[in-house]
Length: 242
Image (cartoon, rainbow, N blue to C red):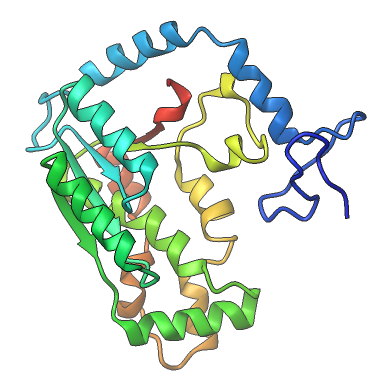
């Protein structure tokens, strides 16, 4: 087993990781970019970008923010609503792994910051079967969580004509340096497929389970290319700017 000299991340990290000749991991190397970036200029660009979406669309909301009730969520929602004066719709995919503290935090987020909220909850029997099959095929009990988290916000955006989704941080960038901070990577259909779905499409479950139908997988079915092009949905990471 190999470990990074700085952060101690192991070389079997689930997101993939590399090391330089000083035994420092790719995540730490990319982290150094944060000291080279003009963050004030980044924030100016963010402000100009968000101005394009403020109440200039045929919707009651300026943007969508995916949330689960973490500390990151409080920061993102407060920044977008209080600092940039936008009206976000908060959306949550119910992971079924909730704790009482997590439920309380999500409730506090919605109440304290006074936001409208929408949640998607898939039936527990369906989730059990999907989890059983994803574990059998991929050794992964977390598939439905990532698939739901990266699908539901886009479904809502296309249906309600909200062309902007604001995510917190890019986990593949901040954890393992898969991208550069200078790339301004956005959340796309390709990112969801390769990383969120582990390259395992929802339709694959129909090959392995007689207990699942196409309707059961609706919560994990991404909008079509035609819908995406029509709604012009765009997903940005706040961590690229702040």
